[in-house]
Image (cartoon, rainbow, N blue to C red; front, side):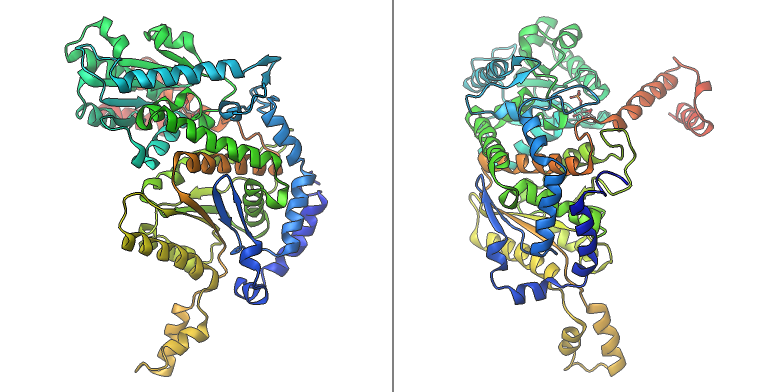
Length: 546
Ligand code: F6P
C-alpha cells in the first residue's frame, strides 16, 4: 500500500469521512455555541475564522496526526535551514532567508547566504532612493517617472499583484506597468503610454533564458533607441534582475545594472528577492521592507506554533481533508477588496505550479488527489456570476474569503455593504435554505400546490459548503506579506502530505522546448518532418494565412 494511505491517521480520516458527510454545519453550530470562538485564531496580524468547515474535533485531531505522521515538522526545519529539499534540481528552497530578520545565519553548501541577501537588499534600497530622489536621471537629465517591469510567471505575478494590492502606498509621481505576455499587443500597448526620456525598464528573469522576457526586452530596447537616445544611454534606462548575471551581461546589460538573486529562490517564491525591485520602486523601500517583515512574522508563527494553533498548517490540512476525503477538486479564493483582485491569480501559480504533480519524491505515481484547481475573483462581482454553481451545483468547492476590516479613504456605506456581502455569502454557503423554508416562503402566493412544490425544490439550497474567513485589520505591506507567506507555507505542508517536490516545474519545461522548435519551423529554420500531422498542418496553415 502507498505510504500516505498506510499512515494510521489516513485510515482514521477515511472512516470519519462518511460519517461527517451526514452532518450539517448548521447543526454543529446549534450544538456548540462556542464553535466560532474555538475555531478562530490570530497570527502575524491576520485573523482566521475556520469554524464554517465540515470538521469535528475528531477530524481535526486526525488531520494534525496525519501531519505528524508525514513528518511536516521535519520538512519545516529542513526548508528553513537550507536543506536541498528541491531534490530534482538539487537545490535548497530559501525564500524565507530573503526575509530573515533574525541574526541567525543560513547556510547553503556550507556558506552563509545572509551577507549576500543583505547586500542585495541594500542595493535595492539605494537604487530605489536614487530613482525617487531624482539622482538617477534619464538620458536627457529628467527624472524617472515610469517603470516598465518585464518578466513572466513568478517574475511577473508577485511584483504585479503586490504593487496592485498596495495602491494606497504608491509613491507620488511613479507609475509602474507590468508586461509579461509574448503577445506583442501587451508591450506595444505599454510603450504607447510611456516616454523614453523618463522610463526605466526592469527586466526580471531568474534564468535569463525565458523567451517572452527576452523578446519583450529586445522590443523595448529597439523602441527606446528609435526615440532618439544612443546605445550608451541604455544603461540609464535598463536594469535586470537575475541569478544568471553572466547571461544578463552577454545580453547587453551593464554589469552594475544587474541585481543578483540566488538559485535557491524558486521563481514563484521570488518576490522577496531583487525580483521585488519594481515593488520597491512603486511603494518605496520602507514599505517593501514592511512586506518582508510581515512574511517574517508569519514564518516565525509557522515554525513555532503547535499544529492545532498553526494557521498555515490548519489551512493546509483542511484542504487535504476536502481534496482527499470529501471529493473536492478545486478551491476558490474570494477577496473582498478591489485592490486584491489579482490575488487568486497569484495563488494559482504558487499552488498549481508547486503541487500540480502526481509523482512522489521517491518516483512513484500517486493514487490519491494532489494539488487542487485554484480559481476565484473579487467579490462582489463573482456573486453575480459563478457563485451560483458553488451554492447549488453538486460540486464540493471549499472557499477562502479575504476581507480587510478597514480600507483607506473609503465611504462607510460602500465598505459596510462589502462586509455584509462577504459575511452574508459565507453564511448562505454554510446554512443554505431547506425545502421546508422555501415552501413556507411561498405559502402566501397564488401558485397551485404542485407549482409551489416544484418552485420550492428549485429554490432549495443545500448549504453545508465550507469556507475560511481571513480578516485583515487593513491591507498594509505588513499584512500582505503575512498573507502571501501563509499561502506559501500552506503549499509546503500540502506538498509534504502528498509526498511531492513542491519546488520544481518539469511540466512547464516540455511546452517551452516544443514551443521553441515550432518557432524555428515557422521561421523556416527547421523542417516539419519531426512533428505530428496535426501540428504540421497548423504551422502550414499559419504560414500560408499570415
Ligand atoms: O512558468 C515557468 C517558470 O519557470 C516559472 O516558475 C518562473 O517563475 C517563470 O517561468 C519565469 O522564469 P524566469 O524568471 O527564469 O524568466
